[in-house]
Image (cartoon, rainbow, N blue to C red; front, side):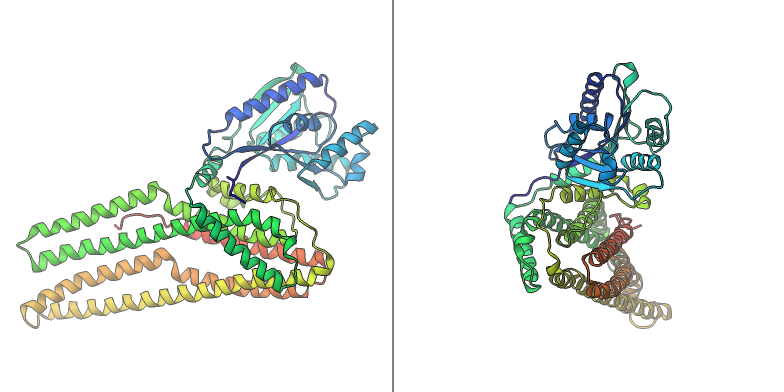
Length: 527
């Protein structure tokens, strides 16, 4: 299976009146709104844009917008129900209306029923707010009048305006006239971030090899757990190409970023020590100081290229996406249902442009083919597979990561102390003015150069966050250990799904925490 670009998925929410004065005019207004929406999107070189319509499928506006929108190529229909299906069907009086509802429900990619509400009106209000909270743009068929009751169209429109959701409404009282209130930018940064990712160059052979290797590991682990590999193969083939691409690109930009950072610190130390060496040992050769100028120029060039190419941003974004996709292999095996993925509010406020990662994951997840049902008799095998291939694998990874970063932190700390000792001895010799002239010059040079080298080491240690990452991974390994126990004890599918969701949430928060920590370590010249 070849890799296909991840589509930019625009979720179109629907609200409006159940009774429309002129459905033909309303339909014309909806078509105009969809055309206006398409024109408002940024031009993308590598990313197809698909519309996903989120609708409760009530009579009137909900179904009309859905009917018009799904005629667009590759458009999808998602349904959120305010009530349980059988109860909701009683809202539709005619057999034709009920039949249409069933037909549209059959072609949806996802159906969600909201939790029971105290009253019917509150259920309708909740579903309207849910649509607003989970859409990128809202299309309303509205007459501009106040709401007739709880959860009415005007109330949902007011909520959308409060949330500054891009909003288009077809005025049903004025012949279907379209009024556009874009509110905030139509996810421009999100789509451009996704387009940049889709445009990354990667050799097909490298991608295929990485994906095949990962699938082989999964097949071996599933077979060892007593599971039928065929039950998961379709998902693996889809996910493997996306995971491998994100993983390879993350490693590429991590190496570039780390090498650039190391060169900046090394060149900064070289520039300072060169100046000191020339001034102390070769004062008659001032042109040697030109080396310092070259070193500084090289630092500025590295910083400029690295920041312009966004090596740091690409590394942490692609790594975050790769880790989300890694978990998707196991979530799909457990048949865990995930809703539209949104970033946590605190991160969303801090980094709105990073929403493309969540959108990319949601697009991949939503496009997974239907999977074969995991039978209850395979519950024990599924638990073994999830424990060994997912939880234990991550425990081992975090323990090794903790040890590796801990050793590097200790090694660089000791080397820094060594430079401190050299500085102390050299400063003492120079202050006491003992020994021949060459010793005095050497001690002066070491008294200047040693703290510079120690400072560069300390900067690298801080830049790489060795100590913090070591402690974070150690804590994560312990936490996964505690989560493995209830997974082993789970004796029903419901219990297993609950603990799988908890593990996924734990890993998600750990990845978010890592991204927050490293996002402030962009390339910059040393002061």
